[in-house]
Length: 294
Image (tube, rainbow, N blue to C red; front, side, top):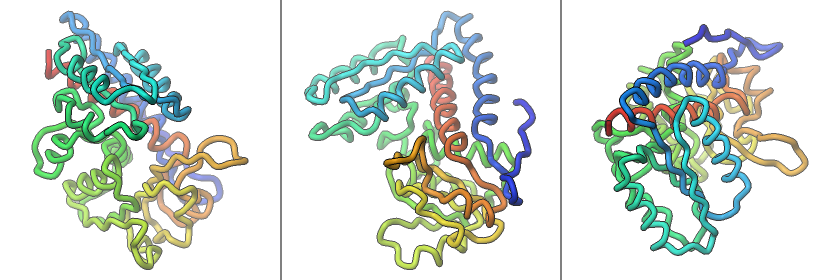
């Protein structure tokens, strides 16, 4: 991996955790593994199920497909209308489960109601769950058994490691308890010997808890919800939020970046922090699945 830039947020002492740079190094490493698989006649393939016409979901799928192509992974996208039947989608997943040329399957979240996204995930073969969010994968995270890690929390852990930020013995506070981010994030930090507190929408006196965090992960889904006043001086702040705000261009994180950077010792930007790491972990999991199945 290339040497990481040591860039600081202007007019602060906060180190900028450059997810783009770390992800770029990971992708470069994956190219060699993909080439080795291709020499054996194996072309790594990620199949993506996209249901409905949510613009953000379409953007995410295009981004993932482009990233796959950049390292030599074949991307197969199946787009279904929002009124597709549950049985039709489940049949497609079963077909991919049985197809040896498909090594990883991603069900783009969210699947529009009244379709049952949880039932679709239960159908997916855990060996192909490169997004790491089936009940089997999440259960393995709890028990310590081998499985694919959920991409965003895994990307956060990888980013912290890339900058040699210690986790063991630290007090980590995760704001958010979603199945795809908050809960697996807390478990991954716990598995790395952090002391972990999970906060959520019903947590009382949230700021009093976040100010205790050595590592603060914002995954609440509310734009600029975490302010500098809620950050312990010297804390590492990880912003896993991506929000669209009317009247503002681009994505906005869950952290008010300017005020938090004046207090933190290190912080992720939005964009360019956690997002690229999520995609890099999806590629890494897909290559790993290809190697295991080969």
